[in-house]
Image (cartoon, rainbow, N blue to C red; front, side, top):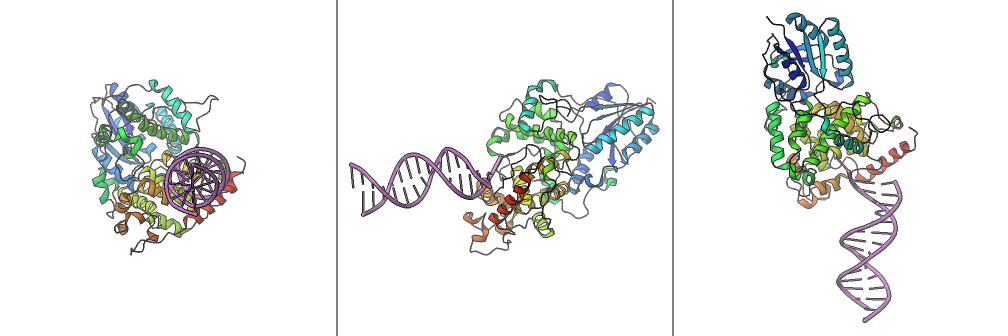
Length: 453
DNA sequence: TGAAATGTTGGGGCG
DNA sequence: ACGCCCCAACATTTC
């Protein structure tokens, strides 16, 4: 039997525009498509509940795929011995633990006499490809984005899904990974999402055909389906950044949308160059920020019981659908870290568990951004007013009423200030007065303002 | 990718 | 007709 070539799939669960797969197929040898459910990833950054749901369904769509479970290094060693594989291909990942793991694995494979090849498949630009004038990595988005545009002709064309002879090998069934929840909190997920490469492409096409042309004007209104909702597909690599770029680029509304894709790249680069991004503030002066951890506040926020309709609608959307509109993510994030003075890492951890698009670079970079301690971060005095944000971006209360049914009878005039309404509702009173919370946040942030780097 | 406070302007009501 | 005041609308600055 001809010896196979292994393609090690990670968060690149697709066959189209997959450079590792294309390279393996080009060898002319049988290709073993391998997925390893990795038990080596640090416990804190294993897939959260919502992501496991997605992963289950995304893996179910992969064909062919051989699924194994364990420590990647060990599994690869076993699979190479079982199959006599002569080469292993994968697309590079950029999370700190993944970089360390892949480096070790490459060395191990070379020691075994196996050709180990990593490819650029998950980004437009490698984190070391774009440099500022002084040679360092970008820390501000706008110049980063300009550099992306200036170099966009270098990303190359997307690759079609290659033809190849599939090698087969015993593996686990998806069910045996035990990724689905035991309690049925995932009901709302099925009608909203279609994980997998086909679902990703379909989502992109639908978006391009209509909402994208108005993306710039409508993307901030959470009751309107004006955003692409591609984030989970992108996180799991069911479609590549490059494919999204090329497919969207010729159509109306593309620039505003592609700018957001570039934010994903920016976060990836940022994490690569700052490996402690998920844990520690990027700006050292925030090390002694006077957070006031409080279990009751945190719990009220998680459950969507803060008494601010736009905040609670967002937190409940997250719980029910595994996703939250971006505008609302900013509002709930600001509320948690500023009004409630809870450490941003708490919000980061909750999002990690609840989001189907939980993504280490994006999640950590965005939480640091809203907390003001990150790159290109919000100025310390920027405190979102949850009432005004509600009035501005959900003026009819359509979004709020959808996710906070207790408020269905509240008239429009009071939908964002239900505590001023004389009627009866079981909805809780605000857990903190807006102005008091705002002032307390400004005081706390003022302490940090003059700290030296 | 903000909000609030403060400042400025100009139209309309009214003595 | 005129000056004065009020206040909404807009602009600027401050947090």
